Length: 488
Image (tube, rainbow, N blue to C red; front, side):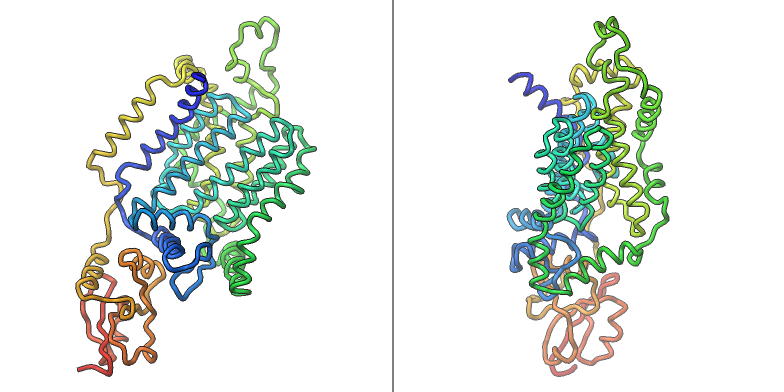
């Protein structure tokens, strides 16, 4: 029992490090870009909408993303109140889950030291942990993908196919976070089966894992089709998948992700390079050459050189990273957050390199269970939390002026309108006030007195109508008052 508790504490150390990177001053910043939109969509599902059916506003269904991660974030916002800190908590939970699942997967094919070190590498990767301070559908997708990876690797290690088939359950949940990307686990796992000389298990990925994943994800997709028909299919699979694949949304050069990692994945890129070089140098060298060497070798010594294919942490990590990097690179629509699935497996490779460094004191430190690291990390977390550090800039002062004016003039849900605002602006207003801005239609609203929020570029056209009078102008935002029946 004591040994089990000690091992658990060891695996919790990377989680503590991740909290140091994500939790301090969680309330800083504001609902910007995707975070505001996802927060509004998720919150509305629990506050007037329908759980599982995303709406961008009460009149507009949201077909861009599946609902699972949005439902989770929305539930937190509904229970604990609408704030930036509350919106980010589920992302931190997901990021912790990814670290734990990544270590559990690494432990299936590597040593305990490699698994724990991989957790430290992942938790301290900037391009990974910074996603936890926003609403990240990619993090939730990755969490479920890593759950599938753990089960598949356990099946490879034990030779029991039901573990591999069971990977379809979390894989289906990944498909309910973002469209289709989770299915990349299947071809990657087929390569793992071949390398591990477990070809007989490959068929279970195709007849068990894949159908189970589709079965888990299908009911929501069918429900949305039954509600909205071809409009859902055209947006969800057409614009969100096919148009992105054709580069109609955003197009970056082929080397985009390679360039990003070469510039940002430090110092761990050096450990990855060392692991690759070490693997090639020792590929044909037996772990223990003689009986005499076997008698004196430690467990760490036995895995430091070559190992059996089913225990090759470096190859498993590189195969995942290479195949995923190729797919991401040929996909024209590229964003930094799409690369998140690279980092758990790159951390495996980096950990394998670190655990093979010819540095005796470092080896003794991690073999002794990283003494004093827990205390140091806890102190760092406390220090970062109480220090007056500005991690993210605060709310937009222009938005504050607009919201203060609307609040002071008693705008209601029936009298609040927008003209030409973007979806993110409308969602932001909803999160801050609990009310949706309705679209202004000049003819339909001709005899309505109301408050119209618009952009500075749209205001001149509206002000040409005598019914409108300007209230305030704040940056790009203009608030107008509409008088029923014409102007004064």
